[in-house]
Structure formats: structure tokens, C-alpha cells
Length: 107
Figure 1 (cartoon, rainbow, N blue to C red):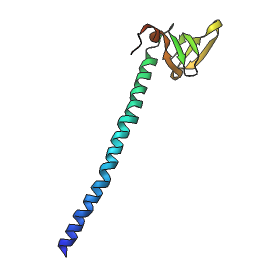
Figure 2 (figure 1 turned 120 degrees about the vertical axis):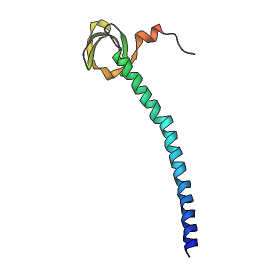
Figure 3 (figure 1 turned 60 degrees about the vertical axis):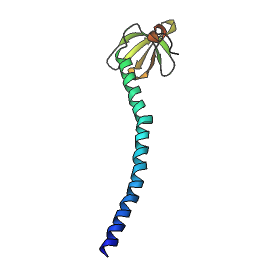
């Protein structure tokens, strides 16, 4: 009687292992294809915003092109065509057009 109980218990752990392994593999794939690239992109954006200075040409997430006229801790003032100045949050920066023009395109 105890031998059959032991054999049944051993068979149950194999079934449990075959269920857990695919779940772990799915989580690993999810991490490398979804989470890790997002974290990397967030770090690059944070670095981009930290390197901005007065006079840089930028493009906002709304698609507005302008030159930085003033910087604060959390906001910046951009000057667009015609001398119009608009205040944006620093997180609204999409691209540093100054660096995009000076660096060669990657092929």
C-alpha cells in the first residue's frame, strides 16, 4: 500500500514540473522582449532630458518643434516660430533635434 502511494506522489511531482517549466519560460521570454526594452528606453529618455540645455532644438511628444529658451527643475520654456513661447513638462521631450542633426544616420 505505501509503495503505491509513493509512486503516485512521484508521478504527481512530474506533472507539476511539466506545468511550472513552461510558465517560467514564458515569464523569461516576456521579461527579455517586453520589460527589459521598456526599462532601457526609459533610462535613455531620462538621460536625454538631463542633458538638455538652453538653446537646444527639440521636438515634443505633441510634435512641436522649437528651441529651449529657459529651463526649470521640471519644466522648460520653448520658443517656436514667430517668437511664441510655450511651457512644457520635461517629460514631453521626444527628441533632441540638435543631436539628431549632428550625428550621422545609422545604416
